[in-house]
Amino acid sequence: MAKIQVRKNGSWHTVADGSKIQVRKNGSWVVPSKIQVRKNGSWHTVWNKSDPVTLTYTVSTSQGWRESTSWRTDNYVRFGAFEDFGDNLTVMEFSGSASGTSTGGVSVSGTIDAVMADRPYVSSVKLQMTRTSGGASTFSGSTSETLKFGQLNKANGTSMSTYNAGDSVLTTNMQTIPASDLQGWSRLSSQTRQFTFGGSASALTGLITHGRTKQFWLSEKDSSWIASGGGSSTSDIYTVCAGSADSSGKPTLEITFDYVE
Image 1 (cartoon, rainbow, N blue to C red):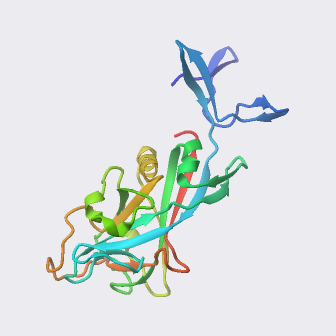
Image 2 (cartoon, rainbow, N blue to C red):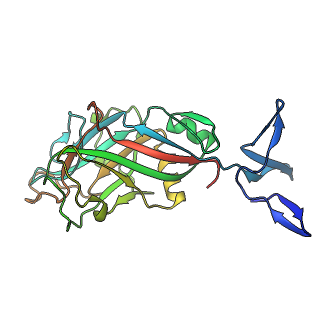
Image 3 (cartoon, one colour):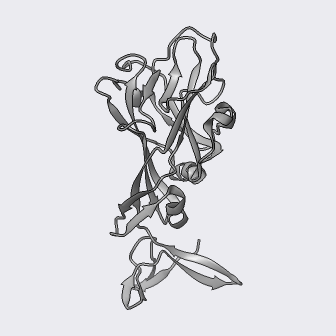
C-alpha cells in the first residue's frame, strides 16, 4: 500500500497508520478513517486510522448436538464425550448488539456485522464460559485434551434442529484452547473462565469476518464424532456450561476491532 511521507530534518518520514492526521470537517478537527489518492483512474488508500474498540457480545442462541442422539433441547453448551453416549458439539450465535468506547473516546455500538463494516480488522478474540455440571469436579492438571472453536457454515437465525451440525463445521481459521488453559477448571460454584485465542491477527479477522452473520461451533473434536457405542471412556474435559437459556453465566465473545490490521 502507498504511504504518506513528510519532509523533516532533510529526510522523508512515513506517516504511520494511527491517529496523528486530522482534517477540518464542519468547523472541527477530526481524525479521518482513511485517506485516499486518485491514480490511474482508481482510488488508492495511503493512510488508515487506528482507533481500536473492544466489545463484548453475549450468546443469543446455543444448542448442543450429539452424534448419537442428534440435537439437544436445553440450550446448554456441551463438549467432550460422556461414557459411550457419543461426542458433543455445540453451536452458538452471537447475533445481538454490543456497545463500548474506543481508545480515542468514540462511542461504538452495533452487531458484529455492523461494527466490522466500519472497523474490518480484529486483533483479539476471547471466549468466556461458565461450567455448571458434567465430568469431574475439576479438570485434571494432567489432561492433554484441547477444545476447538471455529466457523459453522450456517447463517444466524437458522433453526439448529434442521441440519446435521457436524456436516457444517469449517476448520479454516479454527482456534484451539490448549489443555493448559483448561486444567484446573472447576464446576464447583459455577466457575467462569475466559480464554484468549492465540491465532494471528489475520486468522482472528478471518474467523470473525465469517462469523459476523453466521454461527460458531465448539467441540473437543473437529471431525469424526463418534456415535453411541463408539467408546466407553468419558473425556477428561467433558462438561456442561451455561447457555443461552440461562439467566447468568451465558457465553460471551469479546472482540477488539480496528481500522487497521
